[in-house]
Image (cartoon, rainbow, N blue to C red; front, side):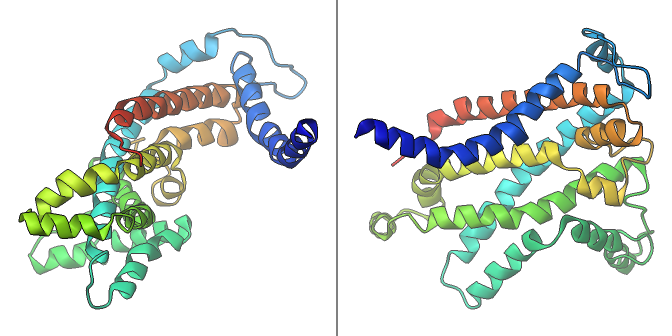
Amino acid sequence: MIKREWINAWLLLMPALLLLFGFTHLPAVQTVLDSFWSTPRGQRPAVFLGLDNYRRMLTDAVFIKAMVNNAIYAAITIPASIALALSMALFVSRRILGRGVLRMAYFTPTVLPLIAVANIWLFFYLPGFGLFDQIRGLFGLPPVNWVGQPSTALYAITAVTVWNQAGFFMIFFLAALQTIPQSLREAAALEGASSWVFFWRVTWPLIMPTTLFVSVNATINAFRMVDHVFVMTQGGPNNASILLLYYIYDQGFRFWDTAYAATLTVVMVAILAIVGIGQFFLLDRRVHYR
């Protein structure tokens, strides 16, 4: 009886396992192997290089620039998206007029295609005619080329990402807030606890599992962003807004240096794994599972 259950279980799992190994694990292993070889070109086969691609990466100024940009991009988008999503969830979880419309409005940016979002914000950033320069014009300020100058290009993309993904994270926080028992609110009201005390002592600890889940997803999103960069700046000007995944795309599909692109991919996956595991170990101590 037990053997039959095991056979049924493996038969049910087999399609998912085959797809997982075929499209995730095997390509990942092949990418690691490719990082130790040169790129085959025409009749010239690949040559084993050992760690040469990794040594080249350490002296690559564009790679270092992409890493610094990605660190800034992640340091801003992760906390800003989580804070904005939690604020919106707290606001629309109350009994207010038009709550359903507000929830839909906050979530709408998430359902828009990333390319469409980038084009909408390109219009907002249009020098002299865009939304932001129209507002600046009311105060007599000169127009700014937000995506065309090195000092603002990366931050222009960062703002788009925060606006785009905050609504998605809001859904998770909203679901978590609705699981908090009403009896806790009533007990806090009887004790005379302020809204801030109730949030800090009750709400925040209870939604920590959701915060951990959202923070891991925000970290992954920070390192896999390429659509907005591709449409808005293409990494420019002068690599001021280049991110790691866009640099990998450039190396792999524009310059056809697939071996070096594989090396960069291995580094990116290693960074994501370290950050993800670190988040679990760091935040798991403060997570209260029920």
